[in-house]
Length: 158
Image: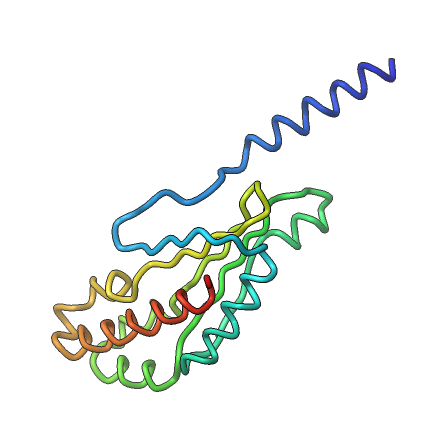
């Protein structure tokens, strides 16, 4: 009987490990950076890079801790909302609707090999639905945000 229980536990663990995807495939308008960093290190490095690039961490969320509290182990998964009040005020001047997209999210996922991936939608993609309303001014702000997010990602992923 103990052998059957051990076999069943191993089989369930294997099936559970297959139920979580590994990695984020390339997508149009996304930046996906595989790193050699551990999950927690990448989270800390993203937060530091956000601050160093004149932005702020506005929100953080992820299911990993809540799942652990329920006795479920899942790979690390954190969404960090990043923005800056100057951009918020400038965008509100041209499109109230566009502000629903703030903060823009950076996504840190833990890979099965212990490394982590940093992904985000480019601000230009995020704000694209509002370009008819916001015109060149919104396009310029989105472009500046693209540069800042790229700088954050580069610094965090090194």
